[in-house]
Image 1: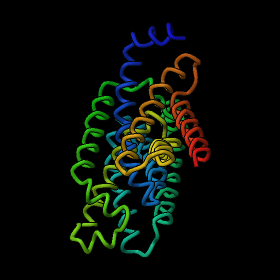
Image 2: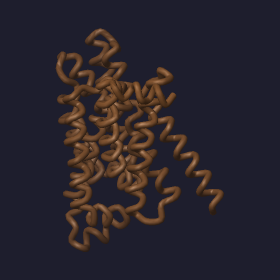
Image 3: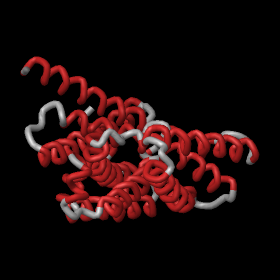
Image 4: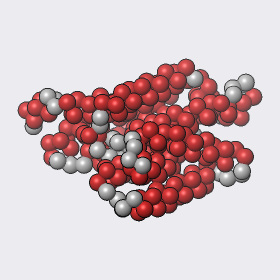
Length: 271
């Protein structure tokens, strides 16, 4: 097996997958911690459904799906935020409203363009081993942006995560910070669909943070451990999927889940 891993590292597509996957893992982990603790983690699932409509549109017009999905998903994230703030529609209901519309739109577009072809199937369930150089660079840029913005707004994000009203009274621009958080999430979701697919990408945001929460003793350690667990699951998942010829996205998520189960049991035993 070790020989197979060494052999796989000689291939450019494996190298691209590891680079893109690691950056994506860190980006998802940084955002996931805040979203999970605010009980807004299902925003990832809702925006993933929106990205499905974006991918269908891109394939329908024979253009790069990610370039269409990014503005579409960003707009949808702002709509969800606005519904939550102004229309008295609670977060989960707003997410469900937008995601159900997007899934229906995507299915109609897909059926109009001749059904669910191989390209659309790969976006549904992910194929990190087929990421292009452009997608690698986009992942590096967006994930680095997520890390920089998260560090810059760390105290504001920390404040609104645990007490939004207190943060508002303390002078934090809650609306601006919420918009930044939701827009960054939309960017990372679009990039993640090539790695885990629209059906599984939200798991990259949810699983590493809740795994870290089982053992972490401070908020910063949750972010650090979440990133470590995510990177481990991506690298291990790539090699396992290559060696055993398994779907890469699903394999990465399964390893994430295994890490969570082990840490959950460890936490219960330690308690």
